[in-house]
Length: 497
Ligand SMILES: Cc1ncc(COP(=O)(O)O)c(C=O)c1O
Image (cartoon, rainbow, N blue to C red; front, side):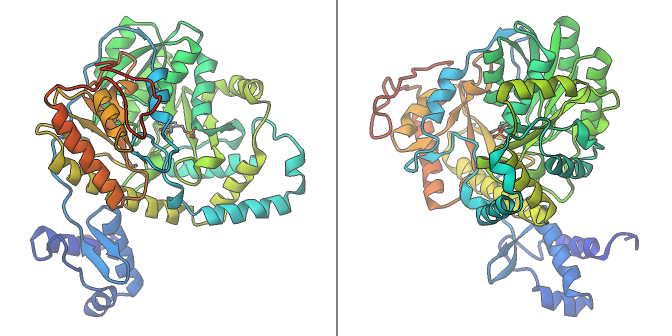
């Protein structure tokens, strides 16, 4: 192997070869760091770096006080095929279903596979609290004044620096801070569309986008999407030729709900295609820092040469959901977005922004990301095994490229809305497939969010969802939500099925 390859890469490759050859098998302990360092006459830190590399790619795992072990291979379950949404524009109507699922999101007695909010226990919230207190002391005036658009300079500079990791050269003066990524998307849509306009998006897609379209009176055009490759660019090109699309919303990295990350070539093609048609791309980058693997994910924005990509993100999934600190680089539409931000909320939450900026600048963000990714990947693998064992025969599951969300496609006879009603009686929520489609498709699909700590309770709950899905395979749908968690709730019988 070439000498220009760093030593720790070579050490990692040697271990990986031992695993591939079967010398080290799933569950085996790999040589201790000190032993390997002695054996190969290399430093302890080189071995540690090699092991971290293997951990990042999911080959081995650290167990507290025991060392590093070869991970069990993730369960082999088939993945869903590319989606085939209708080729027509539709008026959006998803709020009722979303409200239903979210009315249980914060009930501590519920195992909430339905909501994509990661558990507070996974974040270093003590540190967030300390940093916030520090900001209150050092920025005495912060509680007595309005934060004004475009937002705290310290955070905008920190985001611009971070964007270098995503391959983007962003001028911090073009950034506008927002109340989470949801507001960023909302502002972008308002900047480039008018009521009645048509917006193209992946299918299935994040229901939050559909809710924004619904609230702004926009119509949706769902584009076929592959669970590994992302939005079909051929289908998008055809759609652009046939329909007056005014904007495209996409999640090129770690999409919600399919979990794919597009290849760099596809991101580039997407950006070039839309630039050539003068259709703005609204890029949701919220999960990109949770991409598994050791390389940071490049944003589609990295390929933007014409100021046509509006890049949106937040720290809700990586630092603290409660701070709702988001941002947007609105490309050519910066002035419009800045004004819209002012009109929509009259200013920014400066304390939250200063806190995030300080956390980004004082180090430790990268380390906490590594921990989150490792944890989420372990959650995903554990859940896929449970699904392989317990869901009806023929069920397919995505293998996400990052984050903590999986998409399950059950056999046609299983209604995910009926499943929602049944599992709710056992204190469990799931997100039924029709929430993720403007045309209420995916009646046999569901999204499961694994952002809570994976525990026996979670595992048993998922097993129960699988067992009930098997019963539903016979085509039974309940007519009334009952039991402790179902009292007085609106009933959804086969909605969207
Ligand atoms: C894809 C996607 N975009 C945006 C959001 C909203 O993010 P925020 O809480 O920062 O507004 C979410 C939240 O679940 C999401 O999944």
